[in-house]
Amino acid sequence: MTRMIAMPAGFAYLAAGPRPFSAGVIARPGHRLVRVRPRNALSLADGLGLAASHLAARGLPALALAALELRAPAALAPEAFAAFNRDYANLLRERGFLAGDTFPIARSNMAPLFDPPRQTLLHAFTYAAPAASLPGGGPEGAADFLVSGKPELSEDPPGIVAAGDTSAAGMHAKAHFVVAALRATTDALGGDWSLLTGAQAYTPHPLEGARAVLRASGLADLGVTLVPGYPPVTGLDFELDVRAISAELAA
Image (cartoon, rainbow, N blue to C red; front, top):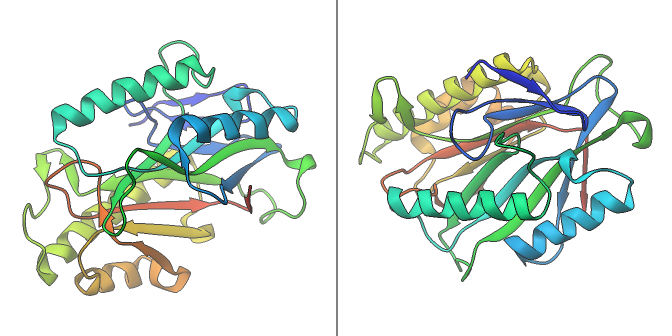
């Protein structure tokens, strides 16, 4: 998770191996990230259509799409999730959002606990745009960035952190691992953790056990949006994403 790749459309991304999404994205000099939340629930296909229209109306290429946030009907077994990822990548290619075999678009996806959708929905999308085309902005020299959702799944050693343990101690261990991973990704991107503007936690369990971790990391002061639900793969109980974005709007 150390290979940074620059896109011609205003952002760079941190490659995440064979996964069909990146570990995170950061705006290149002269650009900022814009997060858009559709006012109405849209299927993934229709949501990508909205994103394409939104970008085209601003004279931006499809490859300016930098991140997607998805809502799924349910958490999937690993094999089913792999099949979803294949279909997802094919859909992005068909719509012109991917070029070649690279996967620059960051992603968060979860399965809501309440009123889950019947199909995968697009909750929000983020793109890169020239800074001069946008009002306001962050601190001088600071770059907008977004880190993909990270669950309590470790690669070294491989396995789920505190697997099956949703006690206060278990949630503390999960949150400690996830926050450390997000901070490492932020550093690898070249982002500034102190400039975060948003964080979202996806879990069906109380966050009481994670409170000390969130406070120590500064996320408690920032304010974490709790989205009751499950990470996208069965067996996982906690996922978190973070962003530092100076322009957010509804469409």
